[in-house]
Image (tube, rainbow, N blue to C red; front, top):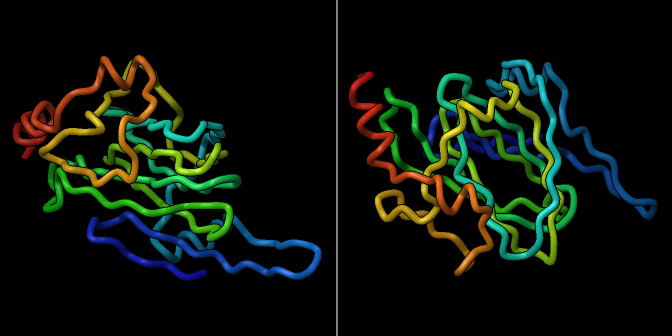
Length: 184
């Protein structure tokens, strides 16, 4: 597999080896030893699968006291996947990186704990599969505004479809910046 680092420490674009022939393809989506060599060492404790329609934007979610690392695959369709650094001690706090993940390119994105995470669907629909290093704690979840001008994510869609939760409970980066400043 090929690993590409990003401008945010710990966020990795992973390009697994794909063995294709006239029957289809085979690829290894996870092997502990190989991923540990790339710096992804935390055990994965939960897998999630979601299907979303074109124009859906899910995010930007994160957990405060039980932060989740995520290893992301798109098994059908295409998404633009984004991580925003919310780690209090990080020199890239408030910065974002994005990657196009699709069933065609078969790339993965690893998002370490301490990041807000979200994605938008670019195909008719997309099946989004991800492994988590921590279980979901709904009472611990926070949401960063997907369109916060201080973060300025360059989303490839306009007027996304949002859940009520993402639309009404999201906060600007400044709400988390204050928290980060008090822990520095």
